[in-house]
Length: 368
Image (cartoon, rainbow, N blue to C red; front, side, top):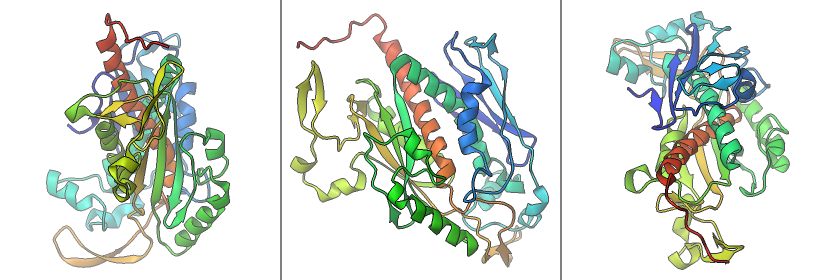
């Protein structure tokens, strides 16, 4: 029921953390798109575990295979199945969790809802599920880039109380990938890394904020009322594991301004209507206005900590539990490609809706 996302461009993810594998079915991809595993693998490499000293040491190559939907390197317009094999799974590290509920995990809620759960690694609630999202998002990003020239980026802008200064209009992918925490502000990146290493040494975890950006989105994408573009972006981001907050444009900081201070004045520049500021975050009335779309996503500290904590067992008896296994001390570096993927999925779905609407309808022309 809740495993699919999107309307015209739709993904359905499948698989458990310590099962045979995980993946995604992508439906609605246009035909004749050049597509091979090489188009998807780079984003999965940025998401995979074991890529640096501040991520989980679980060793997975996360090598993707396309099992359907392509022929001779091009999409057929039929469902695309992408699969990644689980290689380094150790369910024995979670044996105690079979009878005890981990604090702030979904163990209790899944057990209460279904009467059964895949306790090794959290099953479907594990961040390993996001492999399917990132794989599907890589296809969406390719279409957005090649058809509309849209650029999608994300980066870490806060780890606990260490803040970065990042301009949504100017930061680059090269700067994001220049350090293992994926923060383009080199003046604070090392402090973020040190903080993550400190909390890991203490058997603890830490959270923070990711900035997401989409540049070059045409005017008119998004739907009125319930399918507002920012609403779909918010749903996409809050569906990610460990996400706890979403704000777009000025976000919560906008409450400190008056209406006159907050408004984005319009102007005409080179035959286009533009705004002189962008506190709206590129979206007004749920519809893109042609400016850069930018938003922030807050991620909580990872729930699994290597410290003794109070909990109850499956019989409701009070007990204690200490985290075991291999876990990220901070999800942020690996969540950057996840945020990018979900952004691409939302935008392509709305882009295809708008393209269908505009078919046969002349576009408005602005006088010079």
